[in-house]
Length: 446
Image 1 (cartoon, rainbow, N blue to C red):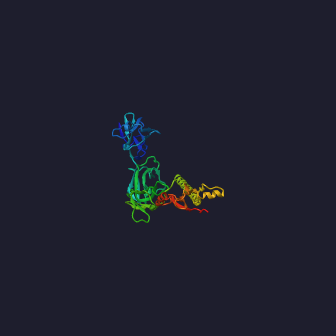
Image 2: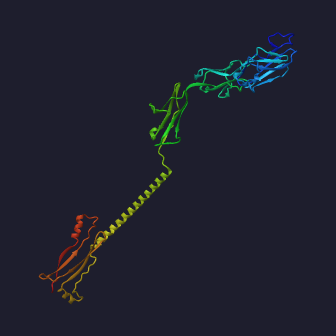
Image 3: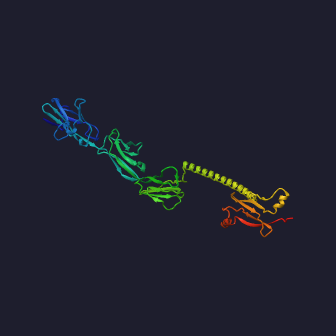
């Protein structure tokens, strides 16, 4: 015998009846739901079993392959039944009905059943891309109302927002700024572990925080090279970089990096860059480039100092030697001059009368003899070279004259070849000896 719940009960308690706690239930995907009911049957029938089903033909949901391990029954009190479903999915959305089985083939299903809706929590953003300063609204949405007056929690980049501006299920950002950009999600209070899929908020803005960096860092010297790099935060990204030098009207270069090679002193100054995109432009703060002179290593400087000192010592030594030499040369010149004056007199002077005696008689007799004089005359050259000159002077007997003849050879001092002209040198050879004839008168005999 099949009895429908629509039939009227006789005497109120002696009839077939199923009463559900809720007729509609909305739950979030991944959560757990309890579906409960209370029931009665005629006392003449003895209950033999009960179960929940969803299909047209009543089959226990616990036998469904997709429900295996996720459905449990619980009888807390008599005539009260609860079904628990865990890890809900959207496929679990259906109408669940409770069925009683009794003796005497008693069958009764509580119709209509409980409508279960499993929904995903969704986040809607309007608009999805905004410019800085505009308004944006984010809405946390479900296909059905989850609970009574639920409270929503908002997250940005996985962190809950503190003191957000909300209106029921909406988050309002007005005006929106570049700091508001990020990934947003929402959840229902009490079900915080179930988050909506993330939505990305994109905020367009012009260049910000534009700055210049230099590489390599440290002191910049002449002849070296540096690279300036421009950085800026912008959305959309910067599409044009321009380099300027302060107080110079024309741009220096374009591009995110600017290299200065073989730096000279004229390159010193303040440099800055301009960043541009579709939302605007911004100049960086100026970077001062100071160009120092070429550096000389300590070793090079020490070597240079040592070389200079050695050169000075050599110069001083040479100067002292030169002065000493000049002093010695002057002294020698003076001595040579003195020697030259002394050499003008004969070095050797041996003049004798061959027939001279110490007596008066001899003197008279020797007057008739030839007088012979020997003389050695020596003159010095300017280089202290001694060229001795020997001369023999002999007094010959006059043949037809009454006088003696004296021959003399005389040589004079000549300057050195280094100081006299070539013609004078030739004259020295040709005229180094002078011969002269000297007639010596003889004394008359008495």
